[in-house]
Length: 150
Ligand SMILES: CC(C)(COP(=O)(O)OP(=O)(O)OC[C@H]1O[C@@H](n2cnc3c(N)ncnc32)[C@H](O)[C@@H]1OP(=O)(O)O)[C@@H](O)C(=O)NCCC(=O)NCCS
Image 1 (cartoon, protein in one colour):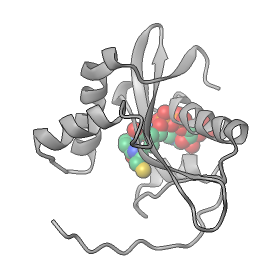
Image 2 (image 1 turned 30 degrees about the vertical axis):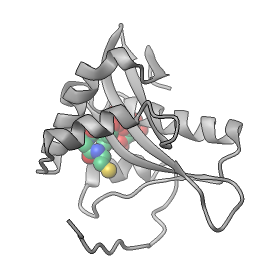
Image 3 (image 1 turned 180 degrees about the vertical axis):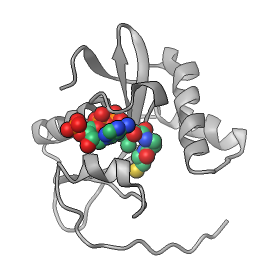
Image 4 (image 1 turned 60 degrees about the vertical axis):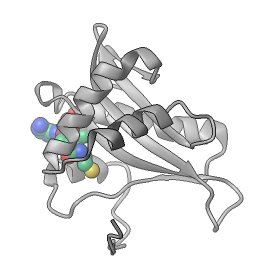
């Protein structure tokens, strides 16, 4: 793990910093969402009936990155699968091992809690992220199709 980086579960008091990272992540993708969606996603992170989770990375007490994930039933196993949905580091800390630490944290948690797998998607041209991801596993060749319904 990166020097001095602490990983922990999100807490209700983290709303401002989570929203800041969320906004940065959406901007990275050139996406915008209604405030009602962001508010709903935030509140569902703490709904025991919704299998969302978020972990935060901090250094010297300051939050510098997050990973949002979904733990879902998986038809190919009796164990759940974890979709790492959103991964984002503050621009000024990139390249310092924080993204690696967040992914490794989910992998370690999954081993401990009996998940079948941790998996994620990225854009084919996100070379920076793929340099990191390729150190965990080669990409498996699946290509995403999407039909937007809203
Ligand atoms: C992709 C991202 C999450 C990686 O987080 P990070 O904390 O910068 O990544 P790390 O420092 O753990 O990266 C480790 C590896 O990735 C590569 N890497 C990542 N960012 C780098 C940078 N700015 N400069 C050089 N190498 C970099 C290196 O190969 C590095 O390997 P090393 O530790 O052996 O040198 C971060 O760059 C980010 O938030 N990017 C914008 C949003 C994004 O692309 N999210 C992922 C969408 S799927």
